[in-house]
Image (cartoon, rainbow, N blue to C red; front, side, top):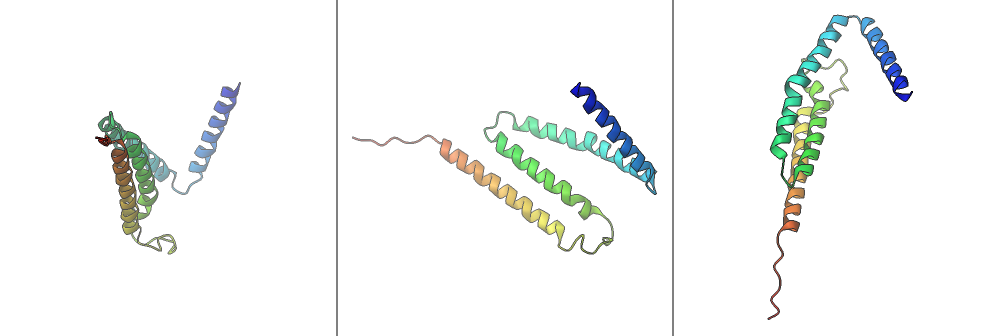
Length: 134
């Protein structure tokens, strides 16, 4: 019963979305943008995530690296539309700071924290030398 309710809700939301797209001034532009997002995801992002996952198999730091990649990817996805938009933003308060520089700084902080976490894990995992009592 729950499955039918959730399915019905999904169909209703799809209908609302289609109605809102049709109400846009340029519905074809919205559909092209959505199709581009699907192509970008399936053609670039998903294969890249799978390739990185294959590279991380068997590594002790796999969880830390995956977390860092999720954070870095999320930050980049949030900032990227503001960075690639041509021309001045329609709202001057949309880009009050240099987002490109700040994104690089934040990604550098993420990389530094991950490197420190990996070094601490390796330091803790190193074999301890026993003391010679003599």
